[in-house]
Length: 89
Image 1 (cartoon, rainbow, N blue to C red):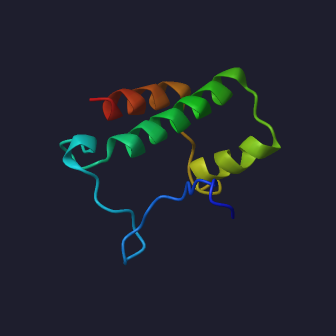
Image 2: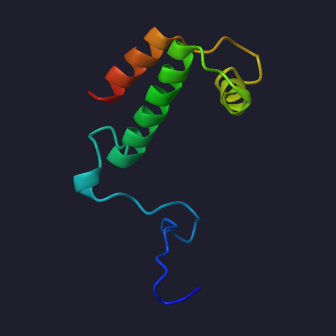
Image 3: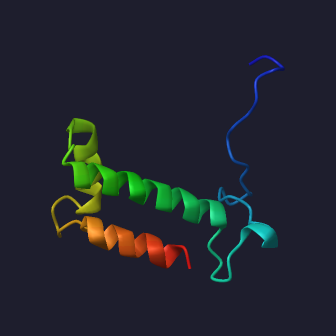
């Protein structure tokens, strides 16, 4: 690695977990804003795929996770919208 390469790996504590977020980045419920935003972005992408019916091999793995390998039904487009709305509060 040369000196101009930027390390993009998130810092961790001795326990291996990311350090606690600063107060400015934390919501009242303790969920860090950037984690929430990443979750919402992922949910919105899933919502888009489901609404377009554009399920392909790569997406099939995601759907497998969403249904716990078929143990239960996945969420609907409408349920995803409700989840995102509740995370935005």
